[in-house]
Amino acid sequence: MFESVPIELLIAGMLALYMAWAIGANDVANAMGTSVGSGALTITGAILVAGILEFAGAFLAGGHVTDTVRKGMLDLDAMPPDFLIYGMLAALASAATLLLGATRLGLPVSTTHSIVGAIVGFGAVAIGPEAVKWAKVGQIVLSWLTSPLLSGVLAFLIFGITRALILNKANPLAEVRRIGPFFFFYVFFIIGLVTLFKGLKHIDLDLTLGQSIAASTGLGFLGAGIGTVLLRRVNEGPKDEGQRFSQTERVFVVLQILTACAVAFAHGSNDVANSIGPLAAIAAAVGEGAEVAGKAPVQPWMLAIGGFGIVVGLATWGYKVMETVGKKITELTPSRGFAAELAAATTIVLASRMGIPVSTTHTLVGAVLGVGLARGIGAVDLRVVGSIIISWIATLPIAATLSIFFFYFFKGLLG
Amino acid sequence: MALWMDKLVGRSPIGPMQAHMTAAVECAREIVPLMEAMAAGDDEAIRACRAEIDRLEHTADEIKHDIRSNMPRRLMMAMERRDLLDILDSQDSIADVTQDIAELADQRGMHLPTDLVAPFKALADRTVAACEQGKKVIDELDELIETGFGEREVARVSNMISELGQIESETDVLLDDACRKLFAMEGELGVATVYWHQVLLWIADLADYAERVGNRLRLLIAH
Image (cartoon, rainbow over all chains, first blue to last red; front, side, top):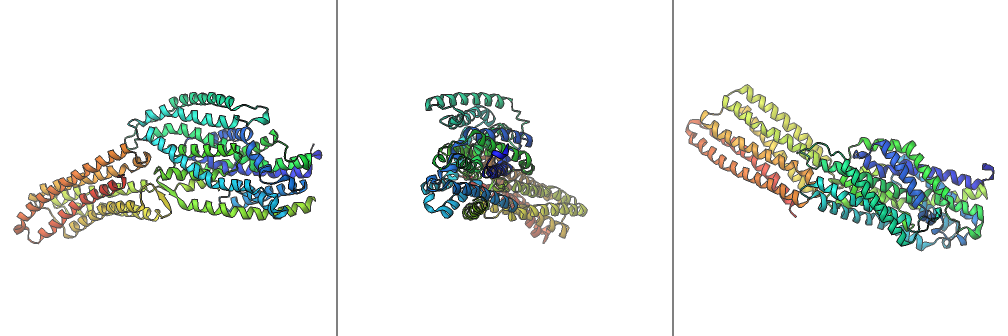
């Protein structure tokens, strides 16, 4: 069956699958690692839950960011379709190389930053600065500052609410059971809203705002119901006078599983675009020629490939990463993990809905800093923040240079 | 790169701080058996007490060094680095001064006169109580973090610190009483009076350091 598939699309498909695999193998551990580390989830449970939700996030809400990566940053009318194909192949190859190298060297490289840097790189240099939609690129780069910031502020507020309504009360154990379902409602409602409102066109479901809100509210109540049952059933363990909050933390484990799921969904909805955005662009250029290149929608099968790659990455390699995380005793207790993850998930799904590619890791780091600033964490290592900022800045020129190199490589190979 | 979240949350110094206080207070607790050995005039027992105190002081020292080398400036902590190091110093003084007492008792082979046993014992008991209260306060550090320094927990710890101050005041009264009884025997004891006086001052110092731990913490949580 592959004879009928153009060679460009085959290479792109393989590179996209590799990217998705790498995202699943590495990034997802950040979403799930804290839950495994705090004992909220077993490794098998984390793989299972992450797999389902990453896929759901990619399939149900991954379209907007994919569109941005596919056509949002470049002016497709200003370039021949061949160039777009070589460029997108180059972007995939460059991001994949960076990921491989960074993983080997243990550096924190964001897939999002590599792919954006690569696309802008080949666009601006190999084709010409006029091929790049600088306003949109500027908006994306700005979002890399605002997303950790927003996430941090949200985490600060969520931890403040947790403190005021639960931890600072006379009976925190009763309060966490009483307040918990509201957080379930919030998570289900938000995910429902960003997914449903004009988000499901690719499966022929187009709801109005009113319909979306109504359906999301229903989903929220369903979530609250599930939450109530789960929170009622959780075994808080024996009372311990030396650790008066150990029982409360055990109930928070349920809430942390919820937020870890939300992060997995959010991650799927945002990061899958890094692998399939270029693939979709190539498919459109190969199949339909220049004049309609910008209009071809992202096909469900592409989202499925991305989701599938992430799940395979999780099951083959992410497993090991989580095992490492799980063995460490993390200082991030369930109540902190909950606040940080809820903030990050909210920020990421909002960005996904707006079609803005952001870094999940950076957003989570912002959230942890937010909880730290609220004096909720014993110690936050600022050197990690520093190295993330450095890699943040370094990734862009490296990805751009690599992608220019690969552009000429593919041009020579296929042109 | 997957483990960045984990690296981001550094090792909290709170657990080691509590372990250090536990070791220091275990050390101070040995003052009571030491006092009994001196009262019994048992040199063998005095030496055994000193050995135990040396061991506990050494444990505390190791934890202290571990805390200091794991508290780089790059950590953003829920409590000020300076304040924690000040508290650590006071905690460490509890172990250090206990060791001073044991060394002197052993080196001079000090045998406590029968008339002084009661006032010395009373002071030692109350001092140990002050140290125990200091340990209780430090045991609340993780609850303070857990509640994000919530008002309820802060009030609870403040009360515990007030109680610690109360106990320390009682040791002042007991010190005064013990000193008077000691100086009444000055003619009989001769130069030994000076050394017994030093032992009394050191014992009272233990309560002072315990109180200082509490007072530093009070400054830290007062907002």
